[in-house]
Image (tube, rainbow, N blue to C red):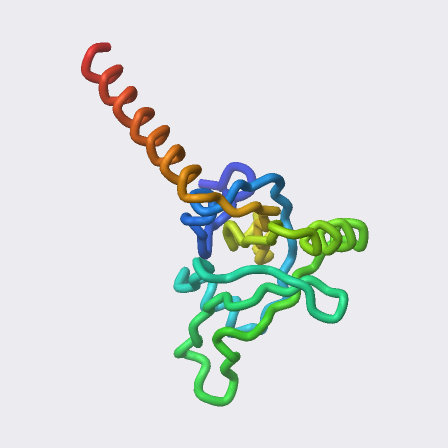
Amino acid sequence: MARQGPEPARLAAQNRRARFDYFIDETLEAGIVLAGTEVKSLRAGRASIGESYAGERDGEVYLFNAYIPEYTLAGKFFQHEVRRPRKLLLHKRERNRLLGSIRREGVTLVPLSIYFNDRGIAKVDIGLARGKRKVDKRETEKERSWQRDKARLMRDKG
């Protein structure tokens, strides 16, 4: 039986705390420059971007501190560096706009997820973020708890 349409985007890594720790003002999709063993390791789903961030280096945007483990089946000669900076591929206007906004105080670029699109190309979802204070985090947790309780009540009563 033939497959209907393109396969859905496959998630390789996700930063679940980003939306809790930051206000995400805007999101955009960027390509990422990877070595062959990094792609294979991402397809295995073992990467971690929980403590990573994006920033400027030499006028380009790079992803720093993203953990992509070594691909064990590649042998010891063809391995990549585990936490190396990885260049993000953006259009020139997007790059200039992002670099201008992160130079302002209190704004940072946070990777939200790494996934493979329907063509099998690795992409990174980047969020333009402002940090939350402790009060904001409590409010977010309270709202999430209320939504959970409300859903439970509706399920039991309805």
